[in-house]
Image (cartoon, rainbow, N blue to C red):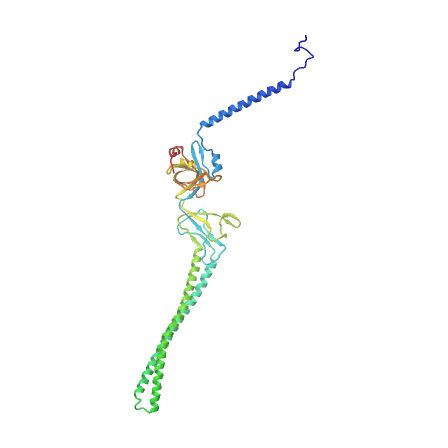
Length: 378
């Protein structure tokens, strides 16, 4: 009987099946290790306090808050508490497409109330003013001439009435002598008396009518004169509007506007549409930062709590701040209407020459203040 294990003629097992078995065992071991690692990671994550990551906020809010070591960090822009917008003048009664700047105070200049800020070309308004002024002078002379003529005409009419009264008196005396006069003379005396009576009656009737007519003519000239005076004052007021003065003490800050096909700050010689806010006068003594806060972080804020304010343009500058208000009306998030964002206003307690409006800023709420405010309601 032949031993099959030592029989040289017996077929040997294939070597490829053994290698495949070892690879299958190795794959199963790697998968088991991966599953164990995932389980450990999930266990750690379930035991950790869940806080929204900065990337999650950035995906939902355009001006998101960040947490660093428990500190709430908000982003916003600086603005002056007291500021006045300067608009290009609107010229009443004139249809002007654009206004040309002939004078402009340098940007960043400190100005006092009443100082000149800008001036627009007022050639048309001054020309209209001078035309109306000359017209007013001519119409004023016409009124004076009409008034003088009326005084002269009145005196003439009064003289004629006096003469008619004298003629009537004379005619009445002649009629008293009619008994001693001849018949022909008596008839003439009677005719003279009737004529004198008619003439005096006519003068007395027409006298007030002449006065009313003259007064009406003078009034028409006065109305024309007054209309010209109002037009002249209107042109003068329009010319005054072309000169803009500072409404408050502060710093002149230029706005970025659309001009000549691109965005930019205004310069001398530029053309600006009426009503466009091309400049602001801001009071740098009181500044603030407005920042958006998402609906989760807003619960950690409390009115009056302290903050630190950094300016992106000046990384080494840190100013103390204070939370003044939170807008109660939240705005929808950028990517979801269910998530809201609120506007928080922080006052800047310090002062620095570098502090200007419209600078990007970061507001940090200290961990202690945040912890004390957590759980509070706004």
